[in-house]
Figure 1: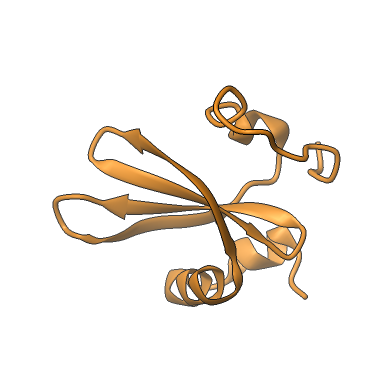
Figure 2 (figure 1 turned 60 degrees about the vertical axis):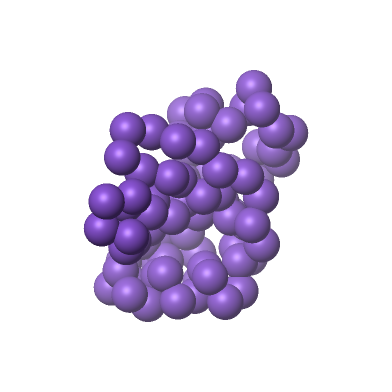
Length: 85
């Protein structure tokens, strides 16, 4: 099992493949030209940024601090105790 930091070191195509195959979809939000999906993978949260105009993935990243989850805390309940500060 990869840690969040190890996940962030993978090439983007491997990150996307891993989270889309093994992750559990939780929620989404819209920001500008992106739809951002939140997934639970192993024991951390991952965001997948989909670009509307290109219909492709622009960014995949494991969230490694509480601040990264701020956009989600008002709309869904998240387990925050496992994220590294």
